[in-house]
Length: 222
Image 1: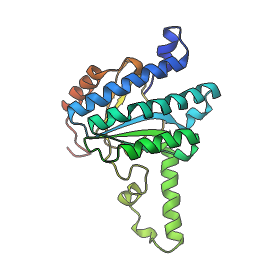
Image 2: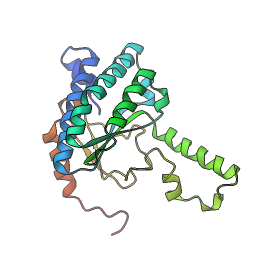
Image 3: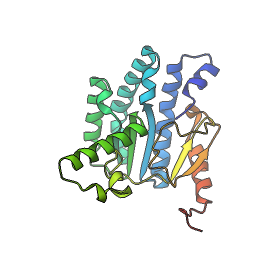
Image 4: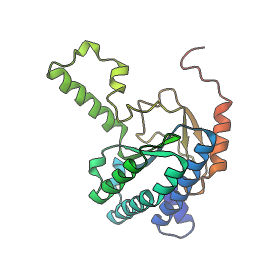
């Protein structure tokens, strides 16, 4: 979800104002996905690299995340949205972990849309964690290394319970993956838009889906 800082800078506002406006885009896209019948929506909310940002901004982001999660639970339940999260969640402040866990539990019964927040997430770290887990199973004698294949590795990733994405939407014109779902995006269709995330709305989502529907997915075949 790129462009929050640039959006705020362009309006002479503090960066956190861009993040606050970005939360509105999240609400709009969740509603749009429900209307479209999308079953899974994963939002790259906070990367492991983001911890390097100024402490005041990180603290503000965590506070905003806590407020957003707590405030949105009634609406998520009303729309049948189940909240989940992936990443090094133990790196989050305790208050953020608590708010997140409460929201996950409160929405666990919903089955219309699964909203996955990638928090303190790094795809390289995810893959390393999976390899280390496999290595421990090999060392303990529970796993024959000859049986390790792509499917087994996938079952050890943070995303083991979710399908690989069909569509990746990249806002603000960025043309890189930024360490996001490197394994899972192998055959995902990309949609790049110049729109900054705080300005991204349901209409933009619909345009991305219309573009996706025109594509012929070959998965390596002819």
